[in-house]
Length: 461
Image (cartoon, rainbow, N blue to C red):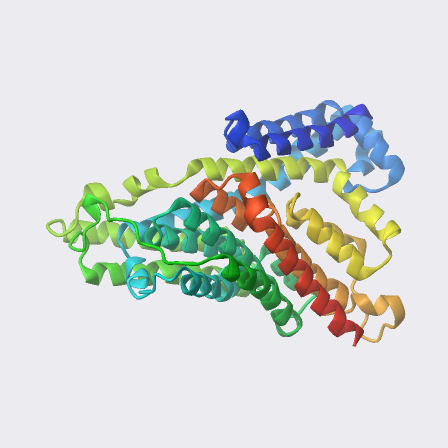
């Protein structure tokens, strides 16, 4: 049973090394991969004791074969649990790779300059409001991860000073997570609840739009009072002059890139196929178009700079590896039963749907919100429409399910590694963990609690 207790200790140690990356000089991707690999290794080595312990507590679906012997348990882990989790992780990784590559292609073809050239203001406060509003509403149509990648890329073209970009990127994370929380297609956890039947599209928009908006507006207003002055745009590189890409191709690539991104939630909603498939399909279409165009317009466009094969070299693979390691680590804890234990402890100790959801929101800033929401969905069944009393909280579009979507979506903004959007911003901009905690984390916390208080108050009235 000792392995069961060692696993969370290893996770906490890995988490600490990631948080202190700028002090220990070990890249967070390397730490995440070691942490994820070690946890699965410990799970296999200690499978007998871990699964026997879980079987006695009847909390894990994989424990039913524990009595059959060591080989059976290993088969469940290696051929069942690991394969299942690896499939889910691969879907997220390929989604991220596809999104980052599409954004890089649009950026390399100077498509984003069509947008940035129309944002003329250099006033920091005005620019902050524009960027935050775009992030909030775009993430409701796309998703918070893709929105963050796009908006941080835009910021890199619009802001010169590093501290400016970090502050703006932090606000992008808050706005993207909040915008994704009220939309059935904006966050993976909201999609889970929507597909699972716990919420409806109209219900979650109606119930969570204002709380989500508050969770963005409150930190935005506070930050506006703290910022002043103007900013300046970075100088263009020598190979990024206005003549580098004809305007016609910038427009076409921008339209194709945005269409590829927008098609992802549409395909997900209509076919229920993983979002990664839609993202890779969009990338493939964009790739085919660029190859055909480069062949036909060789005299106008430089194949050496604009080929997708060359652009792939610019994709931040370290960020992808960081995602992989973190998701592997969380998956191991989920299979071992730690997250199920946590969910059951919350149910026994708190006994209040609002309190449970708020705590899950805090936990989602530390642990990936997907298994947390999955645990919440597994703890309770959907109540029938005429349910009364405590059970009424669990009807379709009931307070527990709606508030769970809000808390899991916005609570991850409190720490930079608490959400996919934060991890993407951290990788793209190199934002230190403690810098985000000091400058942005408390703002996200105030916004999170403000939106939660509004939702609870409206429910009480």
